[in-house]
Length: 48
Image 1 (tube, rainbow, N blue to C red):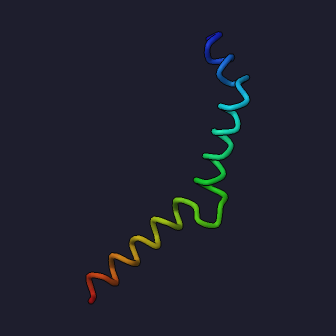
Image 2 (image 1 turned 90 degrees about the vertical axis):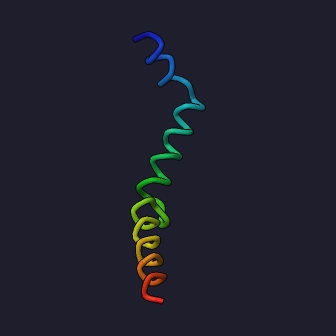
């Protein structure tokens, strides 16, 4: 438990976690958008 608390007090861990959350969910090129773009590209490639 102490190790977990120390991990959350680490500023580098917090910065990395915040960056990862931002890139996964809030950025305009988030993971859901990338998945949709890839699906559309694959569908168009199959139609070709």
